[in-house]
Image (cartoon, rainbow, N blue to C red; front, side, top):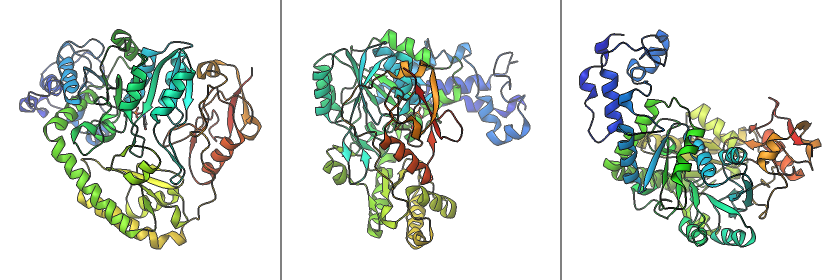
Amino acid sequence: MTADFFPEERAEMPPKMPFVAALAAAAARDHAPFYAPGHKRGQGSLAHWRDLVGPGALRLDLPELPELDNLFAPTGPLLAAQRLAAQAFGAEETYFLANGTTCGLEAAILATCGPGDRVLIPRNAHRSILSALVLSGAQPIYLAPLDDPVWDLAYGLAPKQVATALAQWDRVRAVVVVSPTYQGVCADVAAIVAIAHAQQIPVIVDEAHGPHFGVHPDLPPSAIAAGADIVVQSTHKVLSALSQASMLHCQGDLVDRDRLRQALQLTQSTSPNALLLASLDAARYQYVTEGRDRWAEVMALAHTVRSRLGALSPWAVLTPAAVQAAGAPSLDLTRLTVDVSALGITGFTADEYLNEVWGVTAELPTLRQLTFILSVGNTAADGDRLVHAFQQLIAAAPTLDAAPPVPRSPAPIAPIREPPCSPRDAFFAMPRSRDWAAAIGHISADSLCPYPPGIPVILPGEVITKAAIAYLQAIQHAGGTITGSADPQGQTVRVVEL
Ligand SMILES: Cc1ncc(COP(=O)(O)O)c(C=O)c1O
């Protein structure tokens, strides 16, 4: 590759993207690279790989050169980019994350909870929270989220649940809230913050699916606006950053910022990918400059698709009225969840048909439903294609595999409880492997988790119940995948020998 492949003029980026501009300038600079990564700006890459990725992208894959700042001690363009992001998202401070929301949630728990401290957690939290419990040694108090028996879905925490748990348990060092859920259902974050702050307890919000909330007044309120102390967003899931690029926002004085920064160093690579970090800077710039108009278009597209699908009717589309009936305050209308059970097929079967026959690919198939993410990357043609594919599904459904009967997931709806063994003790115990059925009544050392959505049915430290095993077997039988077993076939679970 010649030096002029990346011409000087490409270094002239809009000044309001400090890290993008610094990266472009570094990529354009003529020099002999004696540093990692070994492909040296693409010059040493396999030709096929270079053609596939594009030489421009490889040229931008640079390490933490002096002019590119340092993620753990930023003083230059990265610090400037993070400050602009804090401004854009309404936070006091923002940290760029190169290891997804996963590392941000782990750091948030490590920054607030030590071994033996209690933390309130909705039982339908993502598995990254479990990792945080193993890493920190904190003891979870699992709270049942709002339950929607009509949709067979678990939503966010009700403020009342948080108040009850705080009255019952001492040594609670943080409250974790998931808002929105995968399906876009929000919790009343402001009310939960008011309850927790009355006892000086910080609130950590997993806003992986809501980084766009602050961009338009018709979207639900963002968790930072609702007063949460730490908010972690998957900028890559909904806004336009590259996969794995997330942001952690914080405000207030309930969280020790020095400890938070230390924790972020524990959970991230010392070689953060510059393309990921630059994509956060670009996504933030797009958010502030054209975000409002672009998201108005996304909401208009979502409205059209929702009403056209609703008119076809052999299924139900999740609506604000449905989630409000179950007690949740709001729904992000750009998340589209369609229940196909009235067609006599599973969400997995519908997903396979829509994907393989019509090239319409959902984010999340579950037993009964399919969830689609709409964002600024979608076009009106995508919407037409989705509606057309669903029209065809009505005719095809009788020829597809019929849905087997499946029980409800028992995990999220159990009452408030402290598991008999902490996830950390269970993880480090000397476990024994048993077949699922033989493990009933024992304490699990593993997390067994249908993926997606990555919400464990059994967590380390919990007693394995008959209902949980029946549910996991039904999911496998219906074509779903269970992750977390030590054996590749997913038939065994390791149990703690106490
Ligand atoms: C609710 C929730 N929280 C956290 C995560 C982890 O996010 P990331 O993939 O950015 O690490 C996910 C990922 O799917 C998620 O759905």
